[in-house]
Every structure is written in C-alpha cells, then in structure tokens.
Image (cartoon, rainbow, N blue to C red; front, side):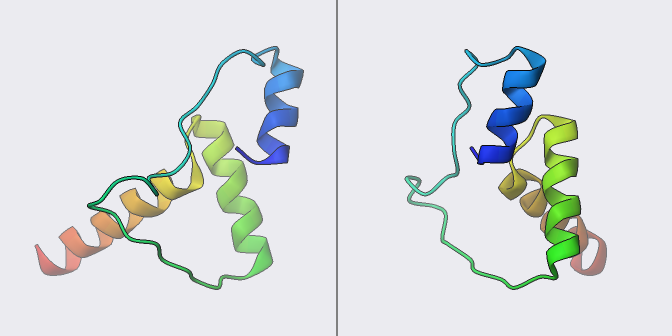
Length: 72
C-alpha cells in the first residue's frame, strides 16, 4: 500500500484494515512495467483510492474491458 493510501486510511480511521498487495506471488501473473504521464498516474491512484481498490486492479479491469471490446 502506498504512503498516500496509508495517510488517507489513517485520516478515515481505517488503520487496522489490512489489504493484500499485488499478485506477484501468483504463478499465473507476470509483471508489466509501463510508463505513463505523471498526471495520469496521479488520477489513477486517486480513483483507486476512491473505489477502495489497488491500482493494479483498475489497470487489469481496464485492459480486460479494452480487449473484450476490441477482440471479443
């Protein structure tokens, strides 16, 4: 969890709620490094926080939706 998310959780009084991080320990997942504009990254982090999700979850959902729409 990012420092920003921890600060927000503290402010909201949710310090005790642990969240599973990433999927790096799953054999059916691979790492993917991409470069995106800083402003887009900031907006993505804020949206993930709003939705109570991790950034990777939003990215995975967006990629699936794109691929389903264009190839499905």
